[in-house]
Length: 207
Image 1 (cartoon, one colour):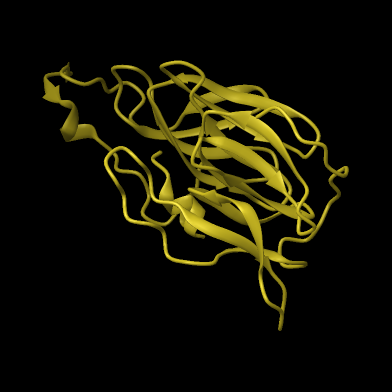
Image 2: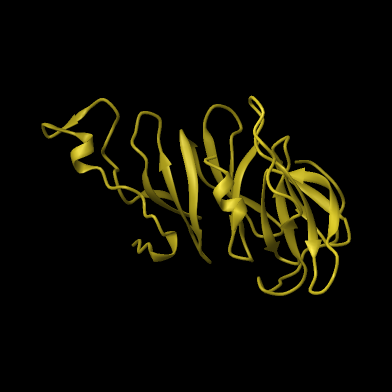
């Protein structure tokens, strides 16, 4: 999905209560044009709208820098002001949070990265409640959203990015846990023990 590749990298509007929906059912949020060219510090953006089979897409009233085609009975997008919205085909929307930079979903839970200050948080939303799964990271990139956890690539300040697992109990490191920039480990440079992130998150096997 385009939205997962754009990043790494609200409060508000009244909307109908969300309900569960299969990820492959209902209208789909799609880009109505190619992402715009980047201008100076701006990020690429595109007009988006809901598409139905054999129908003309209904354009939303805001651009997106990242989005997921379906979430619950609607979809979700991040606008150019870094506001994360849940949106519906009838035009209704509600702002979930400000400062979002990336998002992903399994259709039920929405995972996203927020930078409230200088460091990043990983949060999930189940349609009713937001939960913070990890905080205090220099960088976070979501790999996969699972029913009870989120797998991501992250680095603590001064650390080397590795794979992490986060759930309601907190975040735990899987790879590159003891590697730090500019330091030797047991006489070796950290590159000698570095484990790169998976190129295909769907094949990642984490404990």
